[in-house]
Image (cartoon, rainbow, N blue to C red; front, top):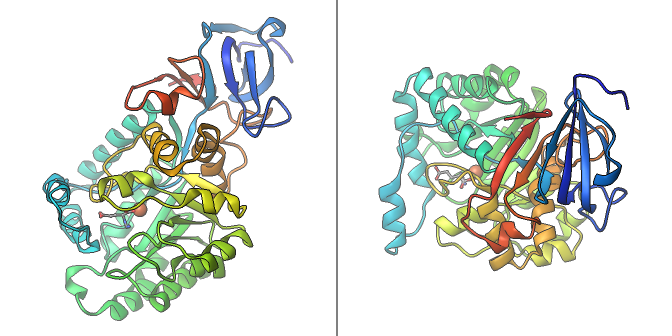
Length: 392
Ligand code: NIG
Ligand code: FE
């Protein structure tokens, strides 16, 4: 490897997670006493610390753990206002209902572009501090062409992973007329917004959109070059998982209430099951059955699902801790799901691992091993974040 002004060696790493089984132990490809070299924003070399090649700049990790940056594949960051009172009422026994989304639609429509962009920036900074180096951002709190369009345009200033959540909940002016809303979305909103997005998403759930309505929205998105993803099976059993598989969706997200046919369908597909335990935590819902999904061979991702209604956290370390403690995922499974799993859900091969040639997106923990992410819940362990080889 050439020694140029652009190389940086991270040495004396206590535990390095590469997610490349060819580079170390197990599915996480773990190496001890390791070093990694970044060159021009990508991973150029991985090996023993003692063998690290000379680089232009060195950085001694002092025995700390280094992991790939988290890949956050599910977040709703374009919104205004907050719903702390709704959360408090839920904690006193009220049930979550999708209708709460309308409160945020009203606030989002009333906000300026600058206010919305400032909120996205604030939440992305927060998410970066907890280790997320790739973040998908959804629209979905406009639910009319004007406000969905500005939502995807604002999101696209911050990420390449923009999702048009064209059908989140029928807005107030379409109350009781969800079919007409879908017709408007198909004829007008999706064609207008598609040039600014990569993904099309729907909330296929009782109280939101039916199977037929959701399918129509996804098909219109596909016709305009978008790739489907689905919010499904969050609040009860339903057709979301099967629709996602039928449409060849990149992922179906939540997957909290599934039956064996849903699990079998996912196992026989390329659709990732993205579990969002932060939402189940903050709605006091049951947690997804991660063990059954993993046992069937389903690819599982973990997302934080930051949104003002069901889950106002940006922290994937928090979700990893829940996944381990309450969903019985091993720490290795949970870390894989929040890194490589998120990358699969976004159909990205350049992030989510520290294999040679991957983007130099990495985090250093104030801990000797990735195990501490679940072992020390609630502690801000992410000490350094490297994005494209540069300390962020
Ligand atoms: O992922 N499930 C639908 N959408 C969000 C919740 C949105 C809200 O309540 O504002 C979710 O949980
Ligand atoms: Fe969501």
